[in-house]
Amino acid sequence: MASAPSYISFRGVDFQYTSQGKSPTWILKDLNLEIARGEFYVLLGPSGCGKTTALTLLAGFEHQAAGTVSVDGRTITKPGVDRVVIFQGDDSLYGWLTAQENVEFGLKMAGMPASQRREKALRQLEFVGLKGQGHKFPSQLSGGMKQRIQIARALVCDSPILLMDEPFAALDAQTRAVLQDELTAIQRKIASTVLFITHDIGEAIILADRIGIMRSGPASALKEEITIDLPRPRRRGDPAFGALYDRIHATLSEEVDKVMRREQAAA
Ligand SMILES: Nc1ncnc2c1ncn2[C@@H]1O[C@H](COP(=O)(O)OP(=O)(O)OP(=O)(O)O)[C@@H](O)[C@H]1O
Ligand SMILES: [Mg+2]
Image (cartoon, rainbow, N blue to C red; front, top):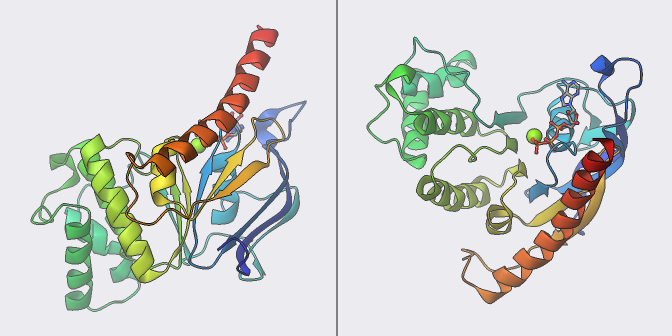
């Protein structure tokens, strides 16, 4: 995968938030990241290093000060239907629509006939473990169920690129494990390209074709990339899994320690 031609590219990307006042600091500096078509790429890194920022540049919600972010050779200038975004705890469901109507909403806007969108929505609801719950309104659903509706609503669009920012973080461990397996299966079936952010090293190893570990900020970029070639389905008890886990944990810990030392020095 790593040597396949690049589909998503970050080249020499520098970014700072303009709202930061007199002395803005670079969040990202010279970020270079290449993702192949159909690849499942997972970003790990200490809190605040700029993972979500990188994802929002690719989504077209923010713009870099230097460098380019492109998909299939086209520079990203704005959000697009080819890139669907799922954020953690995203609470953007329409309260006056049922779960199923929420899942169908984007398809309806795109002009898909009712019977076709109903079939797709029902399949997605089943995928996220909410078969038979489509008639309920968001106020009748738990936080985890609402998050699963968000995921269904995004997946139903069959977008070629999925941008997922800690989408499972608010879910219970059991549901999370089921969705990890299901997401792997569906991603392989529809061959979408995924940029997935998590803090969970185990989740990263279960899902990823490749893992990118970011340095602590400011001026963050990739520190290391690791190709995960364990056969699927991957299980945490496997010794090779454990060895990878330890290696990634050691790399991440170095970066987290840097953040803590910097915070202590500033205190
Ligand atoms: N809208 C904003 N305005 C100013 N600074 C911001 C804004 N959003 C994020 N930042 C800062 O940019 C840096 C990177 O934030 P980002 O959300 O990308 O980190 P992250 O790696 O996703 O962290 P986490 O793992 O905690 O989600 C942080 O220092 C954060 O405080
Ligand atoms: Mg984040």
